[in-house]
Image 1: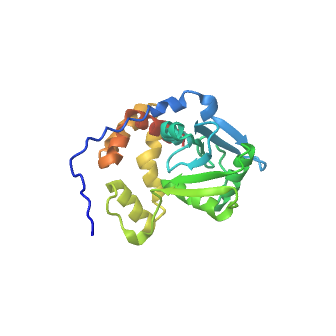
Image 2: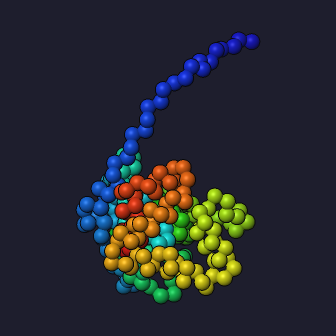
Image 3: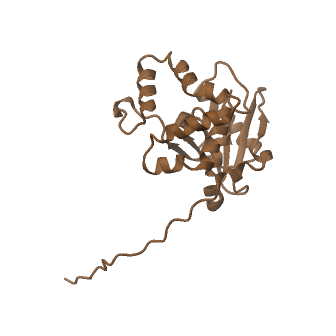
Length: 238
């Protein structure tokens, strides 16, 4: 039996090239503040990032959030040649509030927007609070048009517990499971009052404080000034 040697000498790896500042995606408000009026009357706000001619990816923001959140993806989308379409859900950003809405209703809105943009095929991805809306699309939209579905840090089964969560995430997780009614007050206390303050630096300071609870790459990401500014604008619009 023949053997071959393996070179175990250490190698030097080139450091990763940092991505461009994501705030550049917000420079052209004609791209970030677009509105579609749906056949039933409500408006649907959306923004486009990345390559204007690349394969389409619908991005569904978290809670709280808005289409502005999608600006985080702009540098990577440009590099990869992807067209990102970030959409405001009803009552957030530029989208009209619609009473008695169900998560399942979201798929029809996405289909209308895709037809408006003349997209033959597309993919969707939902982040955090947007995960359920991505799954609603997976359930309802035709497979010949919806080619892929992604979920990023979506809500998991209750049985997996809360290891690794920041403290306020654990609090919200447990309260919502047993006594959901106080959640509105808790979110108001943690987010709404800050977001509605005329001085955006108040929300910024709180966001910086909470980012200290993250670890590793999550913390490094949240400590980026451009990402913090995008989060502040996104949350204030929501």
